[in-house]
Image (tube, rainbow, N blue to C red; front, side):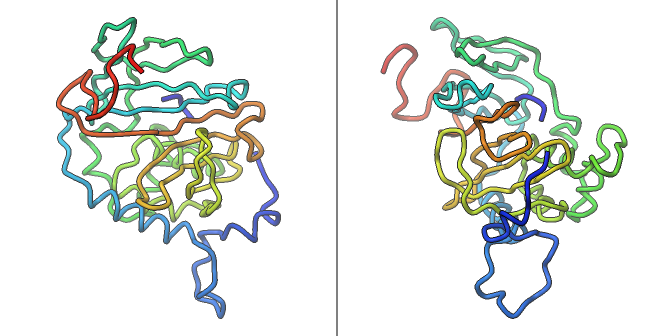
Length: 259
């Protein structure tokens, strides 16, 4: 996955509610979905999933917008990777390639081979992260090096998009300027619910399935809200399943080269 300003918040106030304003109000019963509530739901959904070992293979089917030019017709791709992201696999020309590689696709749909870049926080270190969301956000904002305070929120958001483990959902609710977007649309054109962060170098969004609250995609939207705009890109997970090994598709998926 590639490494990850500003909109008029007043224009969005009817649809979004700033997560940092949590105090009860007289109209709290009718208030829109907040990032804190959405974070709690997403964390609960993740925690309800099966236990996964570091070497467990995961199949994913993606829709990818690498540049705004292909936003109207995203590239679709399938990939396999172990849960710890140490090894990945892909079919190239009908042959399965397996190794410590990442396999992004170009706007034309060509597969590119490059070394896997591990997140600044390794899989093995996840259980040692702070359990308190605010402390976790502070740590993520300074990882791997200390940044200016104005950039920490955006950087923490980017790392969460990479790590996105169960308890990390809770941290999204404590990042300043993160709002719940009840009208999010991913790059595949599906409607969902999102965590929207504005400013801090560009608007970016983590999207979750509105029914299951499972992670559904990520998109960088530049200074606006349009995936077709200059500098925008994103990805959406069309399907995901635990599988016995690389190259194995979930039941019902076609073999390479077959419709």
